[in-house]
Amino acid sequence: MSTPAPQPSPEPFGARLRRAMDVRGPLCVGIDPHASLLAAWGLEDDVAGLERFTRTVVDALAGEVAVLKPQSAFFERFGSRGVAVLERAVADARSAGALVLTDAKRGDIGSTMAAYAAAYLDPGSPLFSDAVTVSPYLGFGSLRPALDAARAAGAGVFVLALTSNPEGAEVQRATAAGGRPVAQTVLDHIARENAGAGPLGSVGAVVGATLGRAGVDLAVNGPLLAPGLGAQGATAEDLPEVFGDAVRNVVPSISRGVLGHGPSVAALRESAAREAERLRQVLA
Image (cartoon, rainbow, N blue to C red):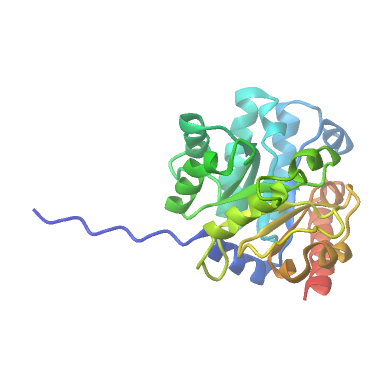
């Protein structure tokens, strides 16, 4: 009886992301169907409105930008029918060539963390995404099931490190054992996970673009998701100050600044193209 040939390992997320950023630019566009945004598009705040909004964004941008980032909460609020819309959006966006980063910010321990990992990082799951956001504030070691699942599937994780919300500072800027800020200990863990990876590691950090000078070492050999552009006040021109020498690995994220130009597909594409060009000029 012959032994089955081993299956090739999937290409790591970091390598796929680096290529997508080089080809399409680094822009990440969030899919955040706020009730107010649905209303601005002339849609009802119901599942039909959610589906129309989401399909329009995917149709407009999945073939244009490097990363689409659906915010899971805005789909979950409609229950199983909303999650079904998210499942289709993830599959359609990936089929059109965008990398999908599901913004779920999951964090737990043991078998529960493993179940979250199975939901977003198992290729057999209907929610399987190229990457997912996770929270390390039950201890970085609690993320091990997600880190292992991502590596096996060629997927990625983005770990909350230094977020832009004011409340985050009381935890993230606190001093850990040894005198280092908690955020820096998280970044140190990420750097260890990415050691030796090329051209880019698959474990990223979430670092807010509104922070000014970050004050931490961002050399983690992985992508740096930078929310806060547009409606939250940050601009492309702020990125070099925040990220310094690591700016080439930044994945700047904008949501309402692009989505506010819908429901016209052409206007959505034009807005994303303008943002992408602005980023190219600043980050080149």
